[in-house]
Image 1 (tube, rainbow, N blue to C red):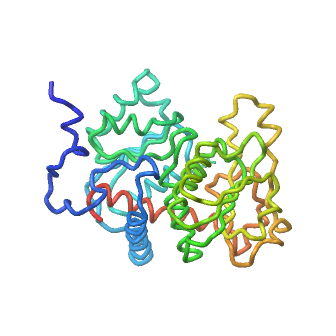
Image 2: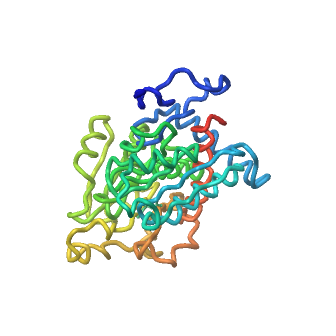
Image 3: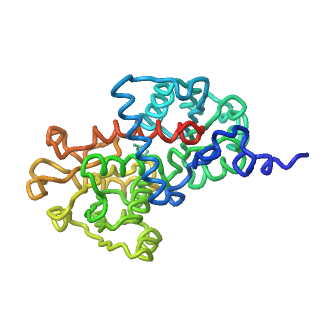
Length: 330
Ligand code: NCD
């Protein structure tokens, strides 16, 4: 039998099409923010910015015409799944949606490696969301086509972190020198795990505001500590809000709690209202990966500092950039 992994294009220096040799992400997986350098980010955001200009100018164009994306979601999703679909279709490609694994062979007991080996027969790239940490790494081990991690349990959500950082850059035009406050469920929230790691490439200060049982995992704090990032933990937002440039609010991840009483005890821990924001700077932004439950009141939506709806739109451009890059067209 041929060695399947060595036959894998991801490990193969002999790329099938000569004109992709210079493309840094061609054929690559996107599994964790740890794989990115600052130079990579400049490149990704440069492409994302071009995507924004093109969408505003022409809406849809044929960069990925004939390419197929398999959108494989083992967990619920509105934004991530539909923005990848929209990204692929705006680039002229098409999508195999598997949003409800209940109706696929997964419900017959098919393993993740077999499911991805099936889908890659029909698609050029696979976007995967899965409840287990490390699922996308496992999928990537078996797949010859690029795997994009769209959330692996409480692990990482690298494409969200990229769009979060792109939002900060587009809105505040800088990252170095900023104070970022992460609020809410920092234990189970994968978006803050990825974003904190990504921000550690910059000269920033981080505050973590969370109930005692939902603190940022110690290993992430240690990782950032080793890079010299100033971090501090709090339970009261008022202690740090006035100096905050980016307030990143998260939902308490109900589905990750083993004990429903523990969830009940923290679910309403923080609610951001116009009143809360009175002590915040005029030039700052409030972000949220969404969905929100009730941690940001709807009355805040008209405040120009509320960036969470614009953040979703930036996600489209970043995901268009990522698809074009891994398919060798950027
Ligand atoms: C987040 C997720 O799935 O981790 N949502 C998203 O992708 N925008 C956040 C969440 O579910 O709370």
